[in-house]
Image 1 (cartoon, rainbow, N blue to C red):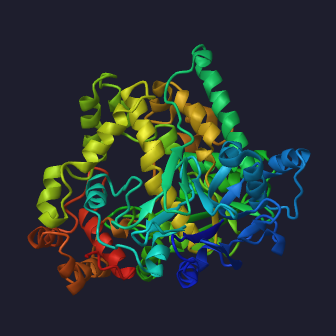
Image 2: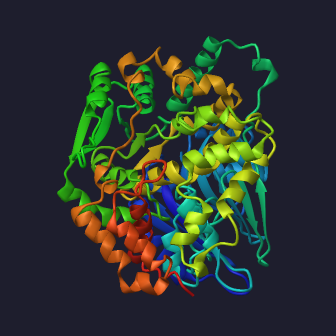
Image 3: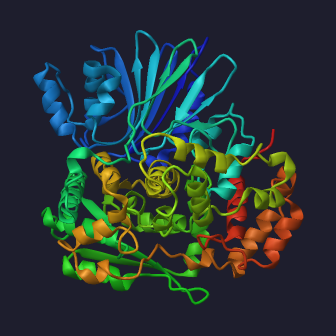
Length: 601
């Protein structure tokens, strides 16, 4: 896990000062080393978090002079030992034991099709030295981030693992993107690719290859797409056979994510998902596994921890468990760091929890497995069962049901809050979801919602949150529920098996073979941070100050009277998903201020 950056210049040599600025911003992503490489029109930079092949031979950017290839890579290839053996059998010679070199030789052997051979999470840039051509690639589920921007009218492109790194290098249009703002304010703060909140910065979509030619031409290809339809050979499967198949696939996913030359721990919230991962790690022989839970002070009568459940699992599997208790006095100062770690504005309360949790976990281990993704892949949210009431061919009915549960506000509410100059043309978010629902490859309305959440919402909310907050402390987070083979299997599972038992029914039944039933049958929990839902005291003052700041007034994103109404009743305007609408507005302004972004032309 690392940070990568680069420039593909057109008509000039690369700007090495800009490359240095980008890599300096990403020091927390890779505290163990750095490197740069430049040749012709291309320059690559890298910050290293040493997880596999801890020697200098694993350093990057990695160059193969015989092949004329150079790579900068962020992520982990879990099947790299098998691929290494396969490539050696084909005549390739290796000088390291790193997974980075497997990508290099894999590209030499298979070209762009190397991505089909990779099991893991990745964002990488491969340069063909002789041609000056660069290939950018992002993993199937977008676990690893990859941002890019054009910096001149000739087609020069810069890329980096974080948006603030691109901003730090200069030459980027940092005007707010009205379409992205519409997504942020309505689509539960999810901004789908290629958009980001800034007009001049884009992100490579998941499962996408981007080719960059030395003359400035750019092209893209999607190389993977899960099918949410039924598979004939599985139509006769019983419920028990589905449970066994899913458990076997998850077991494989967990074991794959043990590959490392450093110890691997596990985040343990006490919910079904992380508890099942701990159980499968114990099955795999991880005795004395280090596990970590976090809790906050209660606010507004709402509990701030779930230690009662995480303790059950820790005792049952005899883990080396760490309870991390965060009082309000510590959380407020940490907000600035958490916002600074956000590549994009992320309104979820979990961000500061993951930030503080990662800070503590990084003192003990460099790699952790985590349970993100199970709710989207196995239908754990409350809006999935009602989707079944929409006819499979009635897109409008499906969209209406999804919007009623997930959207934070409708287009009309958006127009009353956002200033006219920053309004997108039309209902951008509603149009996006409807187009996604209309795309072939999803059999039912429930399948459409699951596909949208697995490939879009999950990528740009929970997964991005985990990456940003763990990497702020040089900690690698691995997410077994996003193993692409497990996702492919789950996508073909009949929706009613997933929505059973108030969600994740098939996963719950599979889990009964591994973990105590009390954790499975408990009420659904979440990662609580009550102080960001019930804004009061210093948290409310912080939001009030930023919304009344000169910079916010000059940007003029929001109608002043609408903001004053939110401030007058700070906890009386919750979204459908019980988020605080005032925090959503305040967080965006806090993020812009923290990163020194004016947001206007």
